[in-house]
Length: 207
Image 1: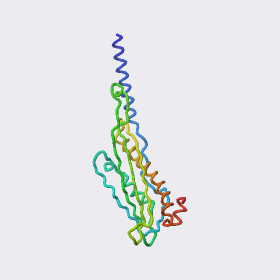
Image 2: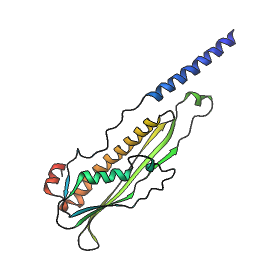
Image 3: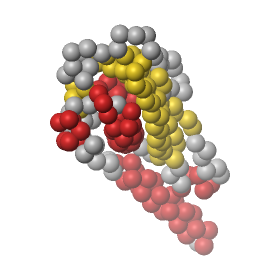
């Protein structure tokens, strides 16, 4: 009788653990708003045109995952340029180069043994990186002003995460990284591109 009670207790404990894991898996994190930079003032640049050069080429294979997602770092950067910069001059060119823009997925170690049956481990680590160079060209081949930024962020995903919650975690990762990039670029542009930013743009952005 004692052995039977112990077996029933173990079964109940296992079922309870499975129930808790299932409940956790069903909880969905809130989806972040669609990526946008329209909440920030437009920066009027004293150039005739703005050109985006995508130097980074995704390998489209593991461990990279940016090609599998609707919002890659490169796409996010293009959106930043579209929504934050305006060419209002009569000459010169602002060239924005996306030097590096990967998102790497790596496996994380799992809890082994019996304890692993009752542990919800972190399954994957996503690491995003974005390197951008900005140069202003006049008539010559040498740039008149330049700046660059490098930002990176990472997050981990639990093993019981649904496909949707993984997508949400990815989108938040990109959004957080782009907030960092936005702050750094504004500071750098004030320091190195001050003469090429319209007065209205400086005032609105707090420059």
